[in-house]
Image (cartoon, rainbow, N blue to C red; front, side, top):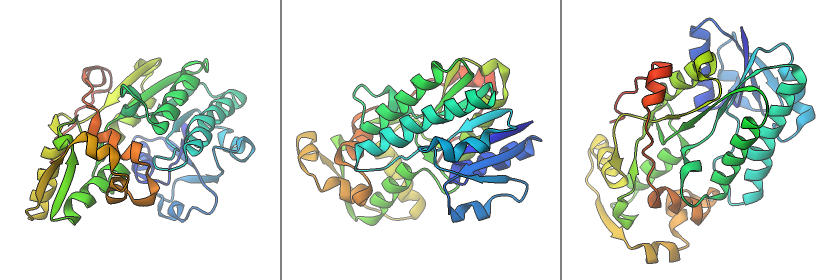
Length: 288
């Protein structure tokens, strides 16, 4: 079996390549032209270059492939059109390439943020991707990761951890009461691989989260404990947090909008994982 992993040179993508190879799967990666991260991929991996926002550039990578794991996306941008162009439009291009190449099986990595009551531009773009996948007529599976921790980690968690560790006194909107179920990257990767290779998963959507529910404030305490430092948290009322445009610069600098920076503090992300446990033998361990 040969599979294509879009975005396979990223942190999660590389780990997924290793996991698939360990399962005896031949792996091909699609990554951006000039991406130096492709040099660190396992030598068995075949590399194609293209931009998912440009259909013509990616189409050759789909020939001779049995299944596609679609990870390529952007998480951070201050320009909403980038999310539409790459996440939503890119996913439509991947669906079209699968159809044109005669590929039936497609695994799409979405985001738990599509379940937020009010969607950010990023969440809207990932939800649009889900809709394209569901309407494709392909044998699809969708996974929705929560906050990813470890092995290089997810971008959102890394920004949060850096913020908490960097300031002796740090502010958390709403007191950091939003609930999360962070997931270890190694567990996320095994869940993605199992979902994409299991016929039982066709036509289903799975949340891939860790076993523990915790608040953002509790997560900060774990981070600081690991660092063996003591910083003071001050609760920031929402009316102030929403008015302080500079807050997003503390969290993510110029890469993230204020709206996206605040969303993680505002909404809970504690999905049930029982279906993934039953169908995929998904057994995540505690992050901290």
